[in-house]
Image (cartoon, rainbow, N blue to C red; front, side, top):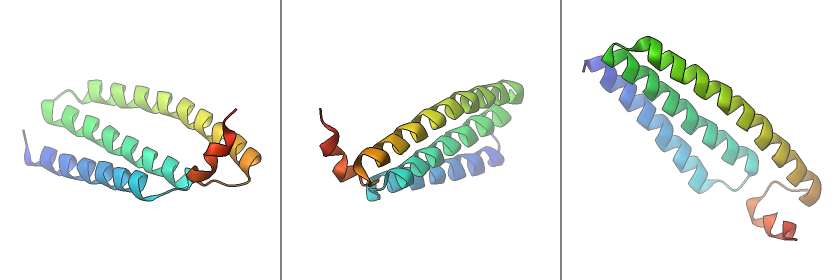
Length: 102
């Protein structure tokens, strides 16, 4: 392992920690969604850094591109759900989601 890998690990851990902190402290659906995306970017950085350190950068890049493709479909689905929730409740507050019980 090189020293560069530790920098990648540190920044990836910082991104994941910032995302988890955002998940714990926010109640707005859009802000929660952004926090989830920050966690995903930290995981992508960790995959790339590990691939670089191990000498398998092509495998790491392939994994990250696949991860991004899956993430784009999840982003589209999550944003569609957030838009529908806003239309139903006229709010993006997580606490008001109890009114959607059917």
